[in-house]
Length: 95
Image (cartoon, rainbow, N blue to C red; front, side, top):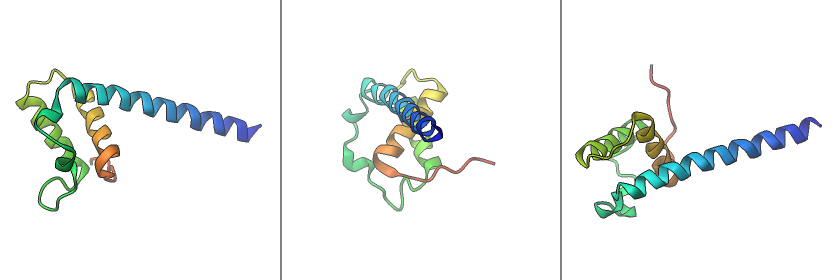
């Protein structure tokens, strides 16, 4: 019985995360980010984006420069989407 509950919990969590990334991917696509970027731009580089915090700053810089009409939480969603898709940075809570 406990195993079934655990399995269902994991399933619903994965569905929730997928839905959130789906929304973030749509924001990313609608903002036409790939008109300026290509997948090579999201490769890890030592002197560019090398942490989740820097990635979020870069997303916000693009957001404001291109006047994307995102709320702060949507910008964070896009950052998480890019992190999961390309970077895999460990997310460290801010102090």
